[in-house]
Image (tube, rainbow, N blue to C red; front, side):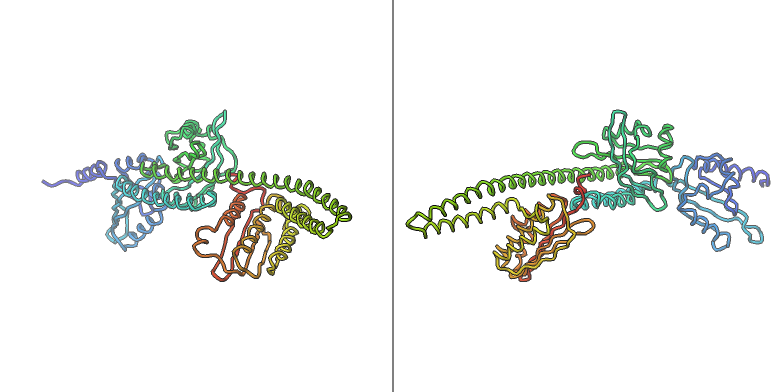
Length: 520
């Protein structure tokens, strides 16, 4: 028995409406003409809402251009149907991965009338695959962070590339590092570093301390307890939604950064193109990255404290040297002068004036040696002539005592504070002592110059150089001491040497108020 056209139409309409796969009839300009229940449930919109718009409105921004391209190819007759994996944005902002099969219906003349599309939700399959890929990528980012933080001297120099690597690996729109400050009223936070994916705007007023407890009260409390949190617009309080809207995010994963057993701040992993939840393996990897950040901050804090202690110790020793030098100069010098006067008086009455003359010569030599010792303990030329004048005096004395030819290249505008001047002066003394003891040189050149960010002192000789094994080991105690003096100010000391080609000792000191690491 045949089926009449009316019955067939009812059957086709029922099959369309009740199909478990999302189905849609779409006009050539992209407007929805008809959608079934499965399609509406899949995207979270009502039929009326979808019929009032087009497929471009629910297509992920990164997939729109490709969707228009394949639609144009079908209209032009290049293809009659297509199979495409694409992303949609649900009404709640979450991402839907779908397998789209679409064909074009044409009239008798071959002109296109509309598209018939079948859409199958494959989010679970894609998410599983992406989770594994992201976990591997995030672990690579963690390894990158470990490598940078272990070899770097300043975590602030390395944090930018680390955040970029982490954000790209996690597929985030933005990654932030906040410094948290617990107060009686709650928690305030200050944005220290931010990485943004292309097209993502930076957070406004990012340098201010903001009341985190007012925008994300329950989550701020969880961060204080060292817990990882996920803030989303859906299900969030009015304050939380406003806080997310302010930074242009739909959801944020917050991971605490602990340093030396205390909360220092937190990492924020932002999704700005829709809500999302990061898989447990990815979250675990981000936690490891946050731990590395905290460890790097703690390590630099410890290094900074050691540098401060070293500078304080050097300052105390210099002050003690100043005190001892003054006593040597005043007390021993005066006593020796008095002794010489007594000897001069005695020589007029003695039967052996030659012997008294020898004693006076010995006193003169002792006076000279006392002055040298006092100058080594606390160089008066630093106070009288400044750093460049002190270097000229040292080189004159060194040339007189050693017989080596000395050359100076001194900038005229080098003015440093007292403690940095003493540091460079002591390093110069030790470098010259090493030349005299080990280099077997004939010529020494000393250079002093100042740049925009630091001061450079260089001591170059034409001696036999250092053995490669000694250079690789960091040099002897003299070089270690010079390096410690430089690093105590956040500076750097390098030694270059080749067999038979001499040695170059180069020290750089920053000229700011204090090393940048002290601010961290």
